[in-house]
Length: 122
Image 1 (cartoon, rainbow, N blue to C red):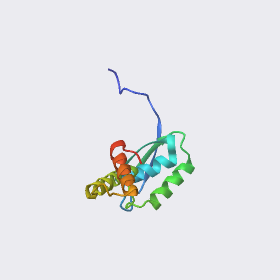
Image 2 (tube, one colour; image 1 turned 60 degrees about the horizontal axis):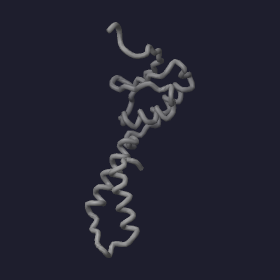
Image 3 (tube, rainbow, N blue to C red; image 1 turned 180 degrees about the vertical axis):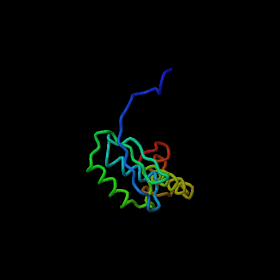
Image 4 (cartoon, rainbow, N blue to C red; image 1 turned 135 degrees about the vertical axis):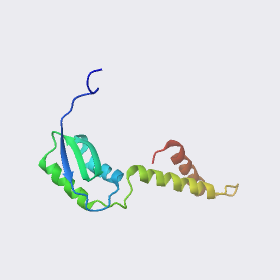
């Protein structure tokens, strides 16, 4: 095989300072929501490096700078939120004691928790 497999792609790279603690997974979500199809990837280490399609504009770069500035590392990513919901549903089910006298709202809540655990959707 000659060369790297896959489509050759040009991209733009924006390097931003990392002056504060970040949640990389959450920041990735925020950038993906903002840039959409233009977004390729992000890396962290010596600053934050965002790679975007060549169609990314100066306005996109300004938006990214604002996102990084406003980023709150304590906020969970979508995947982390989902995981927290699954764990909470599991704990509620563990604590639930069903009997013939269990009321309908409690049963419905239990079924919803089971649904979350089995179907992995919110």
